[in-house]
Image 1 (cartoon, rainbow, N blue to C red):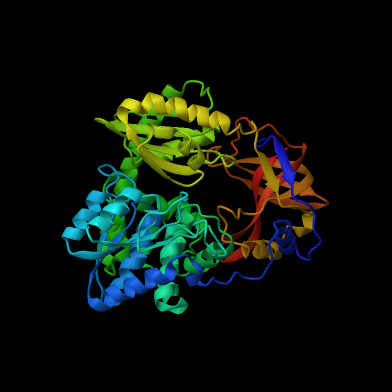
Image 2 (cartoon, rainbow, N blue to C red):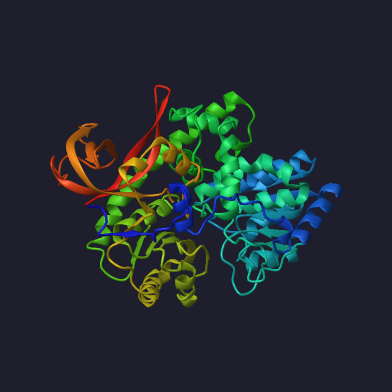
Amino acid sequence: MRYAQWRTLPVTQSGSLAASILAARGMTWSDILPHDPFALPDMEKAVERIKRAVGAGEKIAVYGDYDVDGVTATCILTDYLRSKGADCIHHIPDRREMGYGLHTSALEQLKARGAALAVTVDVGVTAFEAAAAARDMGLDLIITDHHTCRDTLPDAVAVVNPKRADSVYPFSELAGAGVAFKLVCALEGENEGMRYAGLAALGTVADLAPLVDENRYITRRGLETLGKHIGISRLLALSGRENKPVTADTVSFFIAPLLNAAGRMSSADTALELLQTDDTERARYLAAALNDFNERRKEIENVMMRQALEMCGDGGGTAIVLAHGDWHPGITGIMASKLLERYRKPVFLITYDGDKAKGTARCPKHMDLTEMLGGCGDTLLGFGGHAAAAGFTLETARIEEFAEAARNAAASAGQLPREEALLIDAIVSPSEINRSNAMEIAALGPFGAGNPEPVLRLDRALIRRVIPLKNGRHLRLEISAGGVSRSVVCFGFQADGFPYRVGDTVDLAFKLTLNDFRGETSAQMELADIR
């Protein structure tokens, strides 16, 4: 009904249902241990220079980014340095005025404020001009980043990035907050670093870093403590989730959008202050401000999306390339993601003001934006990011030239199949749908990018009742299979247009979750698809 194809992973014989799922995914029960931070390239150089700066009383500037990953990374490093008595300031560029990246003008301001050392987090690995300017003005620069590197690296004291071509670090997919976390671990030891695991987990999940290997280690431990954070607890209270377990979904759907709203609509410093404050009343005020930013963001996004859809027409061509002079640059990333989901082809959205333009891009999994943008030649002033998400700058006069180059680059990258398959982890019998298996599956989390929540399949189930919920916006099915009766919650499946009726025999793809109701925990089937 939702997917044209279901693809089931090969059957494995590994004991329990959860163990079979792990084996099918090529994973094991053994917990991932943290890797040695000094295996990251240039980590020794970075640690030596930072310790020297702290010991000499030099002013250290932490230069971050305005998204959740950048803000949490900034918070981790500034808090640690200040706890060691360092004279530490921070800078996060304004999205609307300066845009993403390491800017020479900002470094000049930090130098003027007395900074002798600047340490970037979540940014800088492609900032060749800014790095050269820092050298020329006598400002030592350490770059910590996780974005895709070019063939050469900026001229800096150290460039700490697990994606460097010469890196021997066992895991290349750390988020920016994860790299900042590892820097603190290198400076102080793993035990000291663990007090920042909650912030590192927040940045990791919000940035859609794959929740495997060390990211899973960081996130599992960080989520356990995140609800106790004063600022985060105020955000959770806004959505009625205070004192409830914090999951990766909680971060993705409730915490991250509110924190991101600061950088999108105003200054990311509001989000940073919320993460830094230990004053409950101040945290309540800041959380309310973030909520107001997010509501305003939604209003503007609705207007911009209507305009974008009108400009798209039938969505023809190899890529979606749209430019508008009145679009808010803080919202184009969300729009690009939604247009990608709708049209399933590369999306490039551009805002312009005067002779300068800024763009954001998203593309399907099988494509690489860094390669596509690299193929756009001299139409761009600069670009950076990941394979699936990137930002770029250009001259307004060259937008049409870039659009043609982007469409050609997308055509060279190939086309995604029209229909996406639903991945099934295991086929189960009715007797396996129980609380014990639901608890073991929950232990495979946290679930998110790179480690999706398992999807199971139950064949030949008889529909006995179809019950509309929430004014027909959701359903509950009462089914029987193998002589066992079950209830299936169908979020987002509407009563109007539901093609199956009482008496039909269907196959169900579903997630087996735990449902807490009035102090009782039971297994719950959540429908993913039906045929």
